[in-house]
Amino acid sequence: MNIVKLHATTSTNDELKSRMRESELPHLTTIYTMEQTRGKGQRGATWVSEKGKNLTFSILLTEKTQNLTPFLINQILSVTIVQWLKKDLQVQAKIKWPNDILSVQHKLAGILIENIFFGKEITYSVVGIGLNVNQETFENLPRAISLKNITGREFDLESLLINFLNLLKNNLRDPLGVAQEYYKYLFKYNQITSFKSSKGIFEGIVKGTDPDGKLLLQVNDKLIAFEVKELEWMY
Image (cartoon, rainbow, N blue to C red):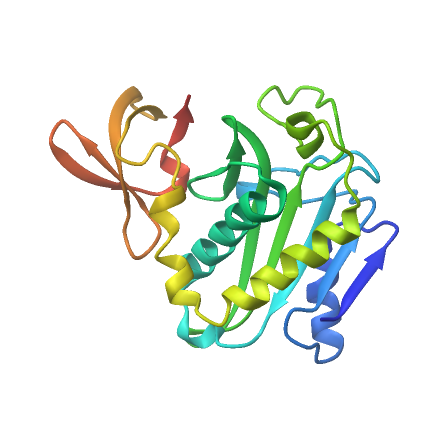
């Protein structure tokens, strides 16, 4: 694996895409940085991270992506993060649809995937991951938590990154098998949960997702598929 460490950059996703345009990079090329000044989250949000305390990195996927859908890639990465947290760090976590990783119902990590297409097929994917590691306080982010908050331990960032990438490399040998584990780790699966939409707050039972990655909720005995922009979790 080709791992590049930067002292600072605006966005590891943007940096990786820029390098990809300049030259051909090998599968699983990873860029991580000690400081990300304009980290990106879902729906244009900013990923805020204290300098030198957390893992902010982006991974290039170029192999077998043609056979995967955008949501399958999301499932594979989400499941891999949760498996790795449990296996290597003994930290229990859940996947909050569509792209957050929670532990004790607080946000521990986020995923932002940017897919590049040729026609209808994905030619490569840039996977951005932010993981709260050694940061202890999160100003104006009451729902955030770090590995240090959970375990009381300080972690070596590069060791964590290498261990995660090794598991990802192994999981990509059976991507569809890994994706099948998604519901096992899905937050509030088969439970009644409150949501907020443009019509107000309502309750629904989380029944999974459809092939396009929409969230399936059972609402008043009807199964309804919701897009990301249509819902806000209330928990």
